[in-house]
Image (cartoon, rainbow, N blue to C red; front, side, top):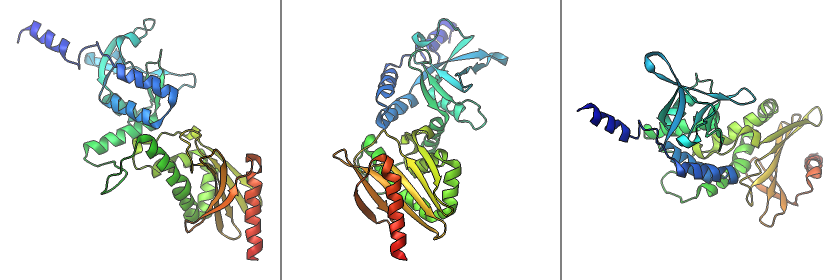
Length: 317
């Protein structure tokens, strides 16, 4: 094959051209930046996994390109990806530009030895960030796909569920079944760990409960955990759940109560209702749901929970 034919072949090969265009990715990035919905994020990730991007790089030994990274104000490093040449900065030219498939970049960032904190899409315009936890989730799902392991949330019978419905379904499972079970099973040891690790532990457990890992939409900062030592033997930990993806019967927050003297736990939630009211509910160790009517105002929730605990203790005595 002569040189001109080779040149034309490379020019037309999507792996070599710099004429990369990703209008659908850009549209989804704009949409996700606005609505922050898990369904939009999932669509964006799916589109990215089938797309190629432009990556600035230095030229190393044997003319091997070495992708560059950028840092934010906190010193975190991110791999920049550009959806097209138009998105590249004219004020900060790079030694070379590499055309790379998204999954190759994702794999590099997900590597445990990598000190990169995530991926930054179009830093000078969209500036959408995929932080490392999300990058690692994407890598885990792709690895499962390559190895032929399904990631469906159901076995046997298929249940049709939108991404948004799935997120809400997982919320209710976690807030009313998974988390109380962890407390009742772990007892004081779990409560002590929660007091130490706070949002980090809640986020990890929330993700653990997700069967479709890629669809897990939250980060540590979406949660708030406050551990309160009410007395020498009584601890109450308040857990505030993400405000987005809230739907009727999802928990706004939970109060985990542990009585060390009695070696007994209580689990209360403030549930959102369809009519925009809230309800105070207790989930028992045997999975029963006890309703206590309309929840008090937020500032009175803790005292109401303590009163319920105190009244139960007095009745037992």
